[in-house]
Image (cartoon, rainbow, N blue to C red; front, side, top):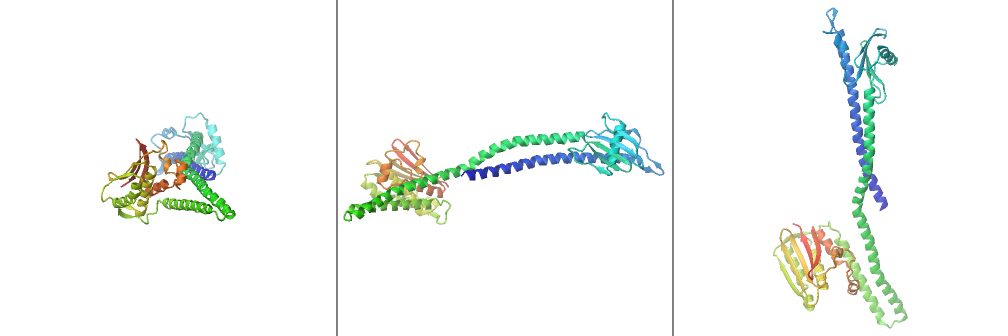
Length: 406
């Protein structure tokens, strides 16, 4: 169970981590692309202005209306310098398009350093590269990446911080989701362990009696009581095994192969009438009311078994000269109720009585060869018919209610 829990946790954790990292990575990539596109845009803009200054008209160079306009161009998002080069790549003119406090000599040194790379253009890694530049038609455009570096690094650090916080949150959420997913499995596993322990316990007693009686029979072959003990305990084991097999079959709630549209009213009425003789012998009064011609997609054998279990349970717990009432009503849903007078279900035990091997009176049930499996079987039959079953006790009357949803 611990291994399963660990695997589920790590799968959830890794999926959520990859998703978070992908979102933050995509955001950083978008920011990087935007900054790079801005630099390329500035290169193109400066080069267009520069080309317009040099564009010939006839045999004379065409000047812009005001020469100073080009020199006074400012760029809001970047620090840009334009360096006009001679044919031998020496600096002819320097234009500072920013308000940054930097001398022409410093710009010239930067230009010479970048020209020594012998490349027409280079943007580089915008997280660390100090400058981006482009050389075209004797004009060198230099962009100071200081602001870009700062923007990208700050964005990256913020995303790393957010990722760290989200990882802590993901860890806690993954644990909670894992516990929620594993809880039904743990409950089922615990029930299975309890079931095996209970079944082993129930089989252990008759086996011990059979073995002891067999040994006694060997010593006293004329004592018939040992054979009677063996037969009695064998019958108990046979009943238990039959109930266990029936329980296993009833848990196959998805098996609809034997379902067919049938008359639920007639099926339940027939099941009730089979118990009239037993009730008469015990002095129990039977009262039933069944709405006619209620149809249901059902397994008729299982429905009869469900009714038999509920009525048999009512007979066993009905007081002397008591009363059993069975009603089937076609309302918003189809509702079957089986009630009996007598000792009620202990408070807080209403849900537990449907658990396997549950017995309120251990001694009484053992004497009657009852193993607490009947109501568990009834619950599984109800579930297979998309029905809810519940029990309640009030004012000396215990009622089992089965609601078949339409």
